[in-house]
Image 1 (cartoon, one colour):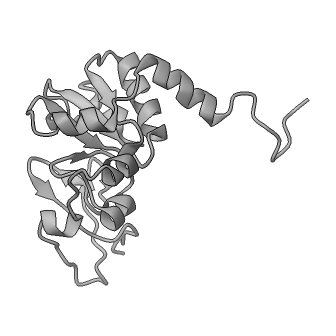
Image 2 (tube, helix red, strand yellow):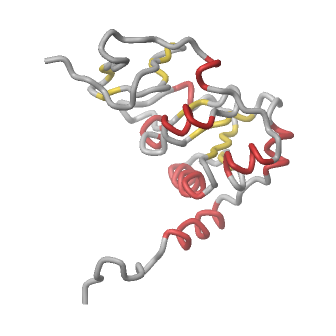
Image 3 (cartoon, helix red, strand yellow):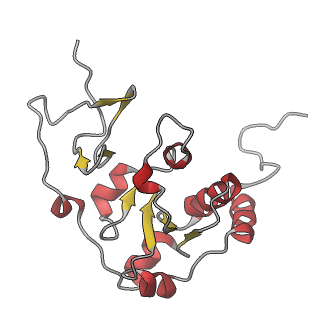
Length: 181
C-alpha cells in the first residue's frame, strides 16, 4: 500500500544521517578548531546563501551550496571548480551537521577519501567560540540599479548572493534574480 502524506517514511532522514556518519565520522568541533589554521584543511560551507548572509561564515571557507557540491568537485562535470578540488582535506560544514554528513558520504562514494565534516556544524562552531566572519565584511558588495537584483550567467546558471565566479570574482545580489526582457 502506498504511503499517505504525514505517515512515517520507510527510511527517515535521521537514519540516513546516522548511516552517513558511519562512513565519514564527524570531526569534533574542538579538533576542527585546532585544524583551522594548519593550511592543509579546506573548510567548505555547504549552507545556502541566505544562511551565509544571515549568520556569517568561518573565515576563509569556500562556499559551495549543498545542491552543487558534487558537480563542482567532479572534474568530468561542466560545473567543475578546480579551486574546490585542490588536494587539501575537505572539512565540510552546514548548520547542524545533517547536510554535511550526507554530503561527506556522497563525496566519499565519489572517490574523495580526504573528506570530513564538523560535528554539530556551524552552530557548534559558533557556540564553541570559533571565529566567524560576516559575509558583508569579507568582500565588497556590488549593487545593481535594479533593486539590488543582479543576474550573472555562467554555464547557463544564475549565480546567487555569495557565489564564487571564476578565479577570485565574487557576486553579491539578491537571492531572487532578475532576467531582463
